[in-house]
Picture 1 (cartoon, one colour):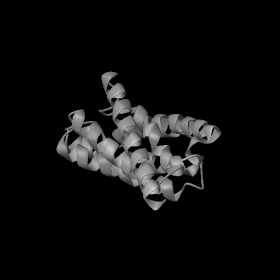
Picture 2 (cartoon, rainbow, N blue to C red):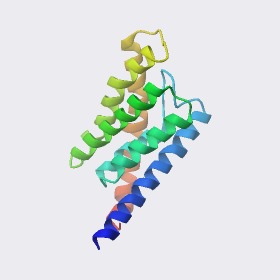
Picture 3 (cartoon, rainbow, N blue to C red):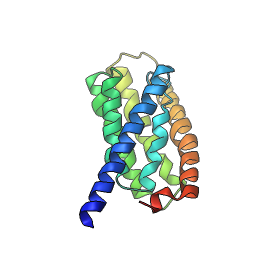
Picture 4 (tube, helix red, strand yellow):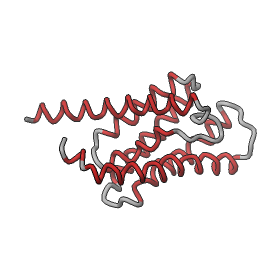
Length: 162
């Protein structure tokens, strides 16, 4: 029974990683997944640690693969993926506080992504402007879309069945 649970968690994490990659590619095709203003549909998935800890490695690996496949610079791959990992860990920690649980990925990306854009890509805008635009994109992705996803998943009770 214990091996079955491990296998299910591995599969759930892999599915989340794959979904993250596909959704990032979709946003990338629309020109929304990189730059100063980023609205990655995949970031809505950062709410999933509320339901299962298997989402934490799934989100991290999905972000890592997405950043590699969309041509991000090495430092962006590293620090962008770490921002997602930190957001996922703290979302899991706040899983019993549904309204607060969307904040960690917003905050981690708002803190980590602006310096990456400035130092790695040479984006010349002011730090506070970049922080604001990244934060707005994360509020749309994690806050609005993520909350809608959480509510839909709560109604479906799908994670209770796995």
